[in-house]
Length: 174
Image (tube, rainbow, N blue to C red):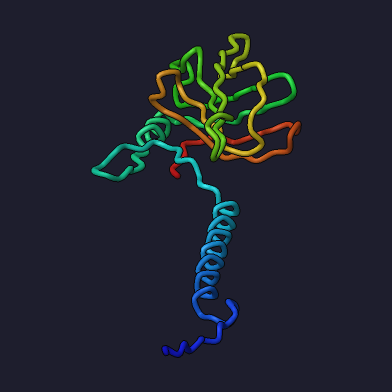
């Protein structure tokens, strides 16, 4: 007769392999949570500026800021509850266009970007432009340029939801 040697069975929690599989799963969950924490705390920034593709990289060329600097452009823009008011200074104020473009860029969400057309106030002695107030993001970047965007002056801003805003604009190299 064959004698059968029964092996005493050990419980699952006393064996190596179940704990190894559980450790691998816990390691995956932990590393995913750490990655998610870093991603939420450090959202990606939208790339804004005057970039040109150079090989496989984008390089800031500063062409528009250089043109604005050559024209001697600077200004201050103010937002109250009813309108935008831009006071623009230039080396040759008479050569400025009758309409300018105002762009409010959100740092990460392009859906929140706003564009407005600033119209020159001919009744004013200086170069003053006005536009109807629109809701803009609470933080971001304001860019003023001619309609063809040959030059621009800009500045970053941060404000409270319904707070008035006064920003100095100049040729900016980021």
